[in-house]
Length: 142
Image 1 (cartoon, rainbow, N blue to C red):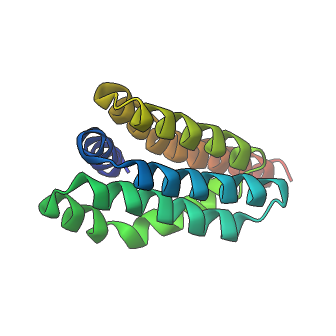
Image 2: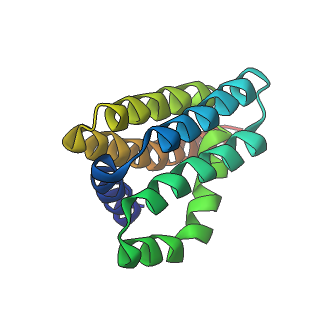
Image 3: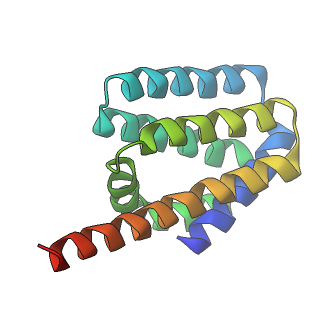
């Protein structure tokens, strides 16, 4: 996941130089759908939009080698995404992170887009690990 965070950050950084208004609108469309699925507490549908969101940023970046390396991590990313989003409250927090990434891309702020994208992926991993520890404690105390 650490490698994925760096790759996602770099993709967002590069995308700030190439993103079009149409692509920003597409990201906003995904964001609105994620908001809808957050209200419905639909983890699987949110996860699909989340994947589309990150895939679009990746494709916008224009670096074919980066795209290929990141796609090699896709199976692992899907498993982590579902586990993280299943934790109560994570959908809302993830939605906010995506909104912040879109704003950084709109402003073409490469440093902020990179930092926010990396932080988003770090939060996915931290969320999974924190929840895993809570589950283990619950089973120990049962």
